[in-house]
Length: 376
Image (cartoon, rainbow, N blue to C red):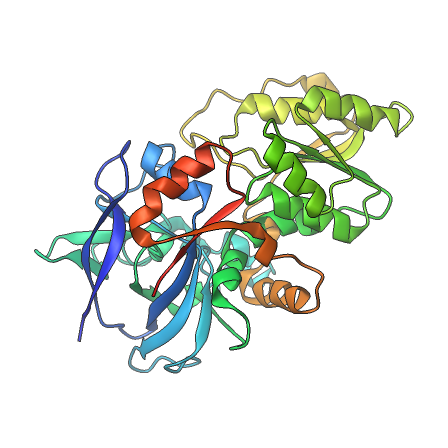
């Protein structure tokens, strides 16, 4: 039977989240229904509210970073049973397309449907509705700002039962994206000098990843003092308010060359941020662009083509930090269990679902590294 629940939706953008009664449909073949324990409050859901990330359907349930317990399994659906603990991956992985078969499941073809709100293969098939029957979309096919959700198994990763779900949820987006941006996308090596621009839920994990990979200098850049302090807890060796000071320091410890890697994790990333990172790296250095802004903005990146070519610099985009969700989420949780990855420290404050807008106000005020919604 369909389940009555409550969720935070956006009716139009720009707008604010509104908590309403929802109905979560029974899972069909290849689907599971999950009772949420926790949902991270990612900046991308704020982009949904501001309209920086336009979606195909309104109303849309926010949330794409969550964890919970399987409450129902669709017919002929293998690999899951009721009671399983799962973390959602905001990126589905089919395991069959060219990208999955090439070890790049973060680029799975199913990702083309992330902003549909409907099932990835059917833009007219929804799993949420309001009490009057109006179809409601699910952010990234998930909609974790809801007490119960129905999702494709391609978007769920089964995890050990002894890992706390309120921190495990973070590995489905922010941790994997930030950690992977340093370790996998940037390929940080021991002894390198690395700049991370923007210390929020993503940047703090990029700091952790760079430190774990052995960088000699992990330079965190953020105008908010609280975030610079937190960056030191996560492994930053130096912190600065602005990129100019950070770049000057990087040159001072590299014989004038500049940083080996610069990772852009600014909450609302622009071409200017990328250009600043580009100016801060050495010859043959790499800029990894992980942050998002207005995805419809085509104004470009103001860099010198001559510098790009003659200095052999590289600008690289990174989706989920080049992490493969169905393997790397479990790796990150093992690192957490072994004490090598800080997850509990990522959560600045816990909120109820009804406090979702307060959580985003706190994020905009620079008060949170990560806010997490906790469900009863």
